[in-house]
Length: 600
Image 1 (cartoon, rainbow, N blue to C red):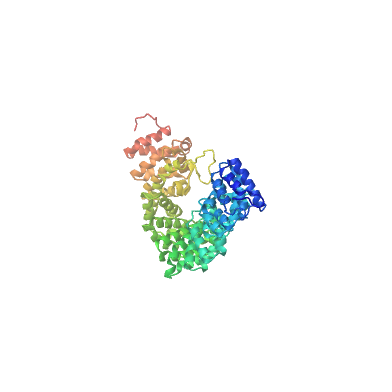
Image 2: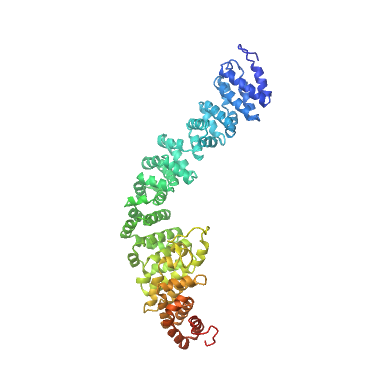
């Protein structure tokens, strides 16, 4: 190979490129770059186009970063002055793969690799090929996000160039870079909009990714696709919106976009071609109902109610969950009232016998929310049949969610104060069964960090832990201790046994002391003495068992000892012999009898 007119010996350069060690390779690459920059190493000088493939071969084999950096600089300069054949070699998948590998190395090498890829990306095939190289898009997105001087801007420019290929845009989105995808959603062809929406619907998106898509404007064009697109566009848009809607931030954007009306309209539609869209539409409603902004749309809940019995089980479940969210919001008192006025409770009661457990739980939770501020109104609509269902749920080995919802309803109903004696007895039985588990549930829910002060609102003195009605089935937090004791004050004795069983759960071995204090504070001692005097034998035995624990405390002995002793002595002498040992213990507490006495 002859020298050029300017005296450049291409053959010498080629030999040195092929055979030189890393230091020699770096030096000759520097010479090649300088010659190319001066215009002394163009297509006419390297007639056979041998320098480019030789440099590429050394790029993938060179061990030192300095050598690779110099080779890429040389290739970048050559790319601007060599012929089409050499440039095509630079644009081959093998060459591009070698360059892409340098993206994950040190800063200088990364910078030159991006610059070289950027120079080559004006070739359409290059933009397509780069996307096909495993990990290339992910590395470029990582470099863009790193905001390193010298790499961030070029990485962003290169991603912009690559985004002319829709497949590259999808890869960018999978790597968490959504701007090109959103651009396609807003301004792409109908086909590309559907492609992007379908991709969003299938992606695993973390909460930050969902929020990012919403903030950057993905929701609005998807809503527009759903409203005005063809069937395929509607389907892909709903799938994407469903994936995004679990973010509370996106739920608010969706509500503000006015999507609730079109979603409900779709659910009311009887057009057969739209039937496949109803399930995702109802699921989106369930998701956006978690935002309190849904309360601004006052007709949404009544319309959902009217759809309940017209829908498939899947849609019913989504609607029930949506209604449960709406009725559970802090400022939902008016919404709950409107639901009740529209016959919501009567509509829900048949779902209590639903075989689909998820639907049943959703209905129970919804009824529980509706009972929050209309206990008397709800009690009038719930018959013994339904009460039996609640009791059965509580007493059977059902899920904790079912039990929690049932106790939520029972605690809101005034059954203990205003129901029939049978209703009171059933309610007390249910409460006893639930409260029996409070101690065990407390042990599983003790805070990990004991140094953290407990919340005053949920702290329970009896169980010495954070208690709520639904989490630990706590009688104290349910506010039912006083109503239970009031039943014992009545003349009808039918519910005594159930009530005493419920109250006795507050006096188990580990908690009897604080349980005694709560019962005493609710005027329970007088009520228990009344049962000890006038109850049946079973009730008497339970009442005296409780009194024995109550009188272990000095404060209680001082306050009630005098009024109790005459009754207790009379019972010991004339009552059922089975009661005598326990009465003896009480009299010993009152210092009316020696503990070791054999009198009884």
